[in-house]
Image (cartoon, rainbow, N blue to C red; front, side, top):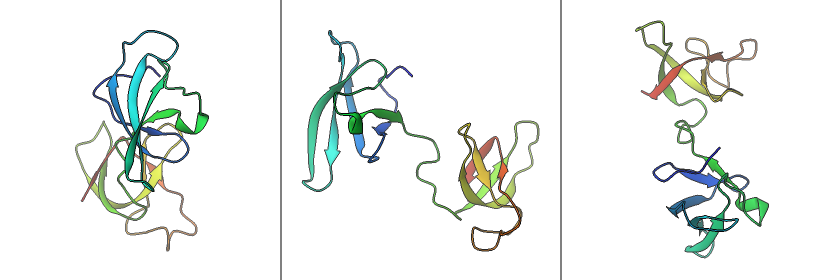
Length: 126
């Protein structure tokens, strides 16, 4: 992964909000930005390598997923690339490949004991 301006990032371990200011400075850590500290309510200035590594591993970067704002069991519409039909489901998380998952028909995490979530190409909040 190469860090780019305009994309959203967070810290790998604490999921802290990150702002990227520039990506073309010199040296081993050419990406400059800040990490939000929610306890102190301040932004901490820091820098990263081109691939998002920091001197402190807890500040390493990961890109924010389109589905980071989704919560388990949120009502969603899901569909696949090969079909224009959108189905009403409940959000079930993200697959290993970063694709959205949803529970079968009206099931939720509370009621889907014997059914595994289905992986979909696309998902949006209902």
